[in-house]
Amino acid sequence: MDVIKNVLNSEIDRINRLEERDGKARINAEFFVNHPWLCLAMLVGYIAVGIVMYVSPYMGLGWFIGFTAFLIFMSAMLLLEIKPVYRYEDIGVLDLRVCYNGEWYFSRELPADAVKQILSAAEVSEHIKNRIESIVRHKGFVDFYDVYDLARLERQLPDGTGTAQLAHS
View 1 (cartoon, rainbow, N blue to C red):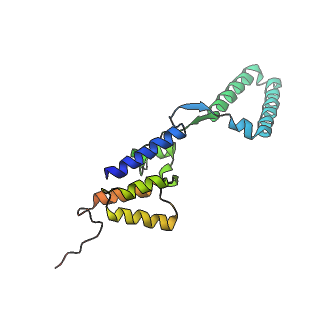
View 2: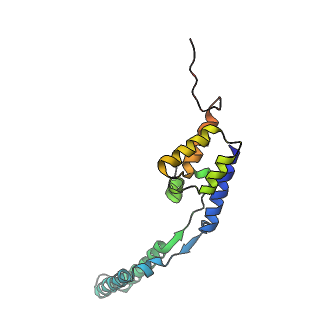
View 3: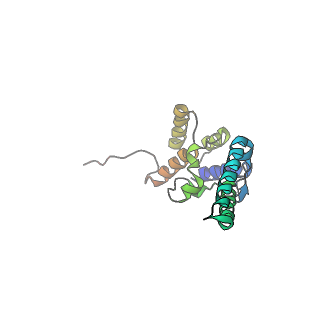
């Protein structure tokens, strides 16, 4: 099903470009913008803990500097945002990549023009076309995994018809 793979790959490339998915780490300052009072409360809490650490006879300046360095490091790590690159090869794979990418292929709707492109392709079997139309009728849309799974199942069938054959005795 090269047609389906090409359509899915072109849509994945479009999504990656549109959402600037390049797998690079960036600082995301949305937390500060969306939660200014929480940031202020965290700063007040840091100052309170810092004062207690600084004036405590068993902690002192060394512990205060270590606490501050740890807090700055953790804050920087929590503000990092990585937009992973979606790949066709990751569809349906359940391994550690799911922790990084998520199962995006279940939640991403295939655009209507991509569905039309698959439905109008002569190389795509009628069985797959009928199943895609059925999924759209029942679910309202078709996601990447639905189309990928239909093409994978079609490839695995020995006769390519999409029907089971009974053996006669």
